[in-house]
Length: 102
Image 1 (cartoon, rainbow, N blue to C red):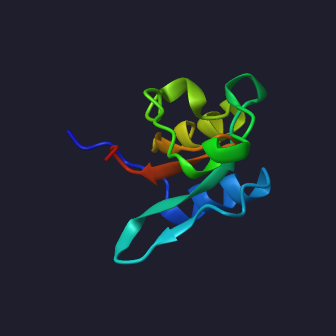
Image 2 (image 1 turned 135 degrees about the horizontal axis):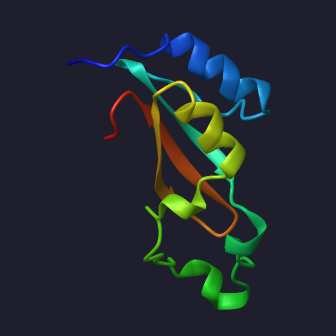
Image 3 (image 1 turned 180 degrees about the horizontal axis):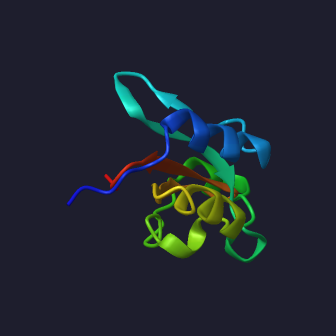
């Protein structure tokens, strides 16, 4: 039995109404969006200084579902869609919105 989901545009409108304007449709994928969002305060880190700023930082929690802000998750999931954390830096992360996850 397939689940009926609301149109993709409705999900994007809900996300943009919350101020997540950087989340936009993904080229080549008609039912997918991605973009950068600020990390919740407790997950942010100060950017490296000095010579450390030239070294890449590896984050073991880049795909942690807890990184997705609760208001964003609620706006997407109430429509039956999925939002996932896909990568991060010190202050923000990339999210993907899709019908059934990536």
